[in-house]
Length: 426
Ligand SMILES: Cc1ncc(COP(=O)(O)O)c(C=O)c1O
Image (cartoon, rainbow, N blue to C red; front, side, top):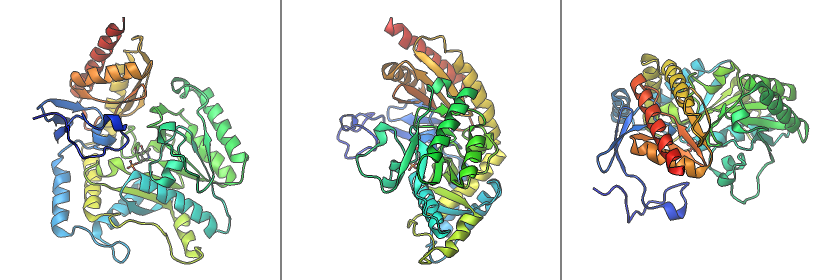
């Protein structure tokens, strides 16, 4: 069976037009492994689309989806309600801190961003202030819808269209390698402080707990605590994007748990349903939702999608929470993530490797450039482990039930690949 689709009519997203054909054909996935059309099995070092956090083909998740498909596929949440969505939103209120109690369910991370920004901007109108400026990291990423795309300054994500509202980007003052130091924390906070002070009062600051697409940049410990204080001083809403980090990826339930803060708005997707069915959520504090009682034309939230909060997706997400607790996946992500990082750090003397960083089971190898990144990622796949290479950075984010033997398997595959790539260079 050919391993690519030479006559493919599929327009693959985020892929240069010249590279549309020739993609690897994945035909099956079980547990932490996937199989291609030629029958090769790989350790899935990237969890599907960074989302299959419970692993593939999990019997409990398949059973939850099947049971819900038989009972009720979905029903209109604009005129009715259903138990899977009610249960999920109640459980999210239970695991999120403080007054983060009110959840709108959507389909994708970008939609969660869209909803979060619309809610934040409308909130200020509801309470009689006309704030509309948003501050983000220049190398942050919050999605690809028209609105979500405005929030990133990453060149490869941008389109040349005018912004519907002002966005100010804060740059990381150091190299990614030096970004996790205490001095970097001071410099980062100084830049966010400048951004808040210079310009009209900001409606919201939106950040990821770790800059995922922007190079897997681990932010300094205490940064979110100080950013929370800064936002409080300016009365600005703090929106945390947990689309990638949420649901155990970083070794805590949420990325912001490392700093113990309570955001005003949280966006979630990917791990929420372990990628089995599309689902996303935006949770806001009770006062933010309550402000919509004063919303000028009394239409409530002017945002939503036909399949948002789909009953099957919500039923799966409820079971994801059960699986995570039963299999202690958050704890396992912390333990295996620690082993993986320590093992990969031993490769730092390799001249092609510039930095090894990570948090929980979100680990990255920064190489000396895209050529080395591509060579190491390709050789790692040939050694049986799939990773994701982008612009010189190789991201490794395996499913959270990773075993200690599989952690070793990843380290050995990457080590072999890095040695081969270094030898080929000389
Ligand atoms: C941090 C973050 N936010 C938002 C998104 C957008 O999510 P989606 O691709 O589901 O629209 C992503 C996607 O990778 C992400 O990593």
